[in-house]
Amino acid sequence: MDYRRTYRSAAVAFVDLVSRVPTDRLDGPGLGEWSLRELIGHTVSSALEQVPPVLGTATGAAPTRSASLPGASSFAGPVAVNVEAPEGYFAFVRDVPPELYAAAVSASGDDARRAADLLPAAGELAGRATQALAAVGDDDVVTTPVGGMRVRDWLPTRTFELVVHGSDVAAAAGVPAAFDPAAVSEATLLAARIAVALGEAETVLSALTGRAPLPAKFSVV
Image 1 (cartoon, rainbow, N blue to C red):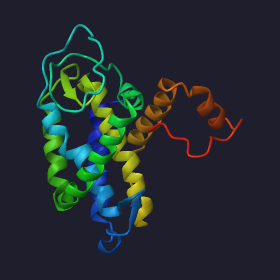
Image 2: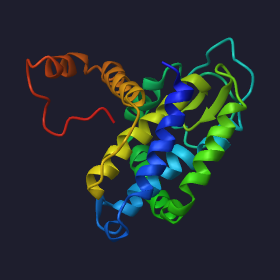
Image 3: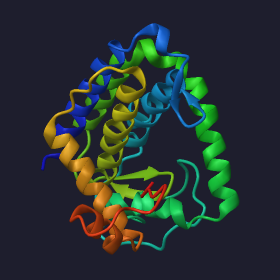
C-alpha cells in the first residue's frame, strides 16, 4: 500500500467533504464536546497544517533506535527513531501519565477552536502538505510529539486522522464522504494494529468474527 498516495487521496477527499458541509450545521454538534466547526478545525490542524512543519524537521535515515521519550509533547529534541511503527504513535498516548494525557486533551480542544478559523484555507493547507511530502524520503526521520519517527511510519497516522475524523464530519453534517477505498483500508488495518499494540487483539478479533460484541465505549484511540 502506497502511504503517500493514500495520504494525498485522503487529503483531497477531506477538503472536498468540508466544501460540502452546510454552513448552518457548522455550529451544531460535531464529536463529543466539539462543535462540527471545531471537529473540522482539529482535523485541519492535526492532519494538514501540522504536516509541513513536522516534515520540515526531517533528517537522513537513522540506523539505530534510541530509548523512548516519556512525556514528549513538543517538536523539540534530537531526531532519533523512538517509535518504529504507526500503531506505536497511538499506543504511546495510552502510556503517558494521566495528567499529561489530560493536558494534551485540553490543548487539543484549544487548538480545535483556534483552527476553526482555518476552514476556508483547507485546500491550500492540503496543497502545502502534499508539496512538503514530495520533498522528503521514506526513511527520513522527523520529530513528532512522541519522538522521532520515519516519514513512512508517521504519515499514516495523519491519513488515519483524515479518514476517521472525516467520517465523523460526514456523520455530523449529514453528507456522504468519498474516501478512496485504499485510504479506508489503510486506516482500518492501522486500527487493528493499534488494538494489537494495546493488548486488545483477542477482543477485536472476536468482534470481527462474530464471536462476541465489543465492550461498551471500546476504542483504540
